[in-house]
Length: 60
Image (cartoon, rainbow, N blue to C red; front, top):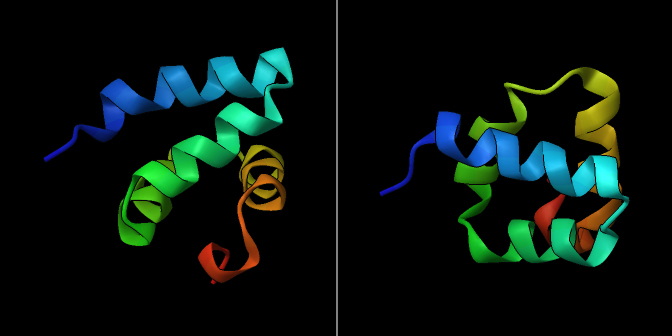
């Protein structure tokens, strides 16, 4: 199980650092539904940045 509030700061840190490989790894490590739940805590622009780093099969 995961805690969205614990994962959100790490994801934001990856975004600020411009670590696209890290963001992609984040997307691949979690179930797509879990990633979607974490994205709810981001601004729309941040969410789009995350989605552009994820493989296309995980973007749905």
